[in-house]
Image (cartoon, rainbow, N blue to C red; front, side, top):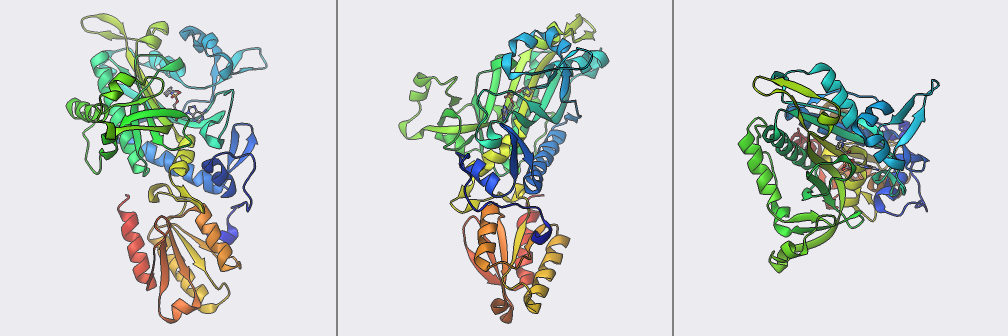
Length: 446
Ligand code: P5A
């Protein structure tokens, strides 16, 4: 993409209404614009990052054996009356009446709708286990929408639902989701810590939240430092292997890690002093096992060979996809702007032409632009006739992990400058070598 043709409305000044870095930077870098309180338009660069996160989520869900689908945003109130949640959900639910006077709502979550789909099509234990998921906009009329996309009223969620024959099988689904979520966050370049949590209006006893550590997080968290050393790395995982998923689950849930809702000071005190960590965290996902809560009230049953018809065991699992964009920025920025992890960066490299209109510089940039595109590195070429300082400031603000600077002086010596946004380290290299280096960095991500 050429910057001269891209819609990237950068703001020079800090917006006065943004209290935290991610909100400020998303507005300044032209990623989002507020439509109404807690409701945002995603401009091209914000949308690009959102799509990258969605793609990673889909990829890891499909790898874990889950079925992608798409349910509507508008749901019938009657389904929620069946489960008993229509009245319980209170003012957070946006209620709508259609022209025929029928009660509808903008879905805050989809347990009821998916249970209805399941009960109408699945009748036998032979069709189990089954996990269905989608990535769809939700609406929760939050009392205090704040911090931009972090606590929005309209937000994008990946939500999945498992249907199993008994508790044992449902716990495997729970463990499998834990593992696939850990992989998902790692692929986004993030460390998200699973913590024992409280189930709130979704219900059930077993639930874990995933938290990204950041000073501006809404939850206070307490954990054993050892958990920070855990990583799945490149490990191939067999998601059908119950023991393997259970042992990864155990490894990640044995060190103490809890939010303020479930914190137990006595247990925490048993951890050696130097490993007791207190911090703040952003909740970027949550998984639940709630047994037959919805299947009993909504009559989602399967026939079995020995026990007749029995209600299925269920769980649900959510990733805050739009919140994740803010969480990544909270965890990865400096005073000059965003620092994207390579896996989710809107572009792979920024090309800065120091002397637009200079034949040699223009030609070198065009060549770099072409080869980066061919290598799948997805370059953003700053081809505007701006001062070098302004171009550097824009690149730092939008946070691409790598920048190639091209100027007549370097070209005389056959070199361009390759700069790493995170470390600030620059090196002078012939253009082909700079490309080779970037190609290597990005090939590791696939
Ligand atoms: C699990 C999926 C659920 O709704 N039902 C279906 C279950 N869980 S949850 O914890 O309530 O939400 C899942 C994730 O969605 C994000 N999230 C939000 N993101 C932005 N703005 C909000 N107002 C908001 N509310 C929830 C969180 O990341 C949460 O973990």
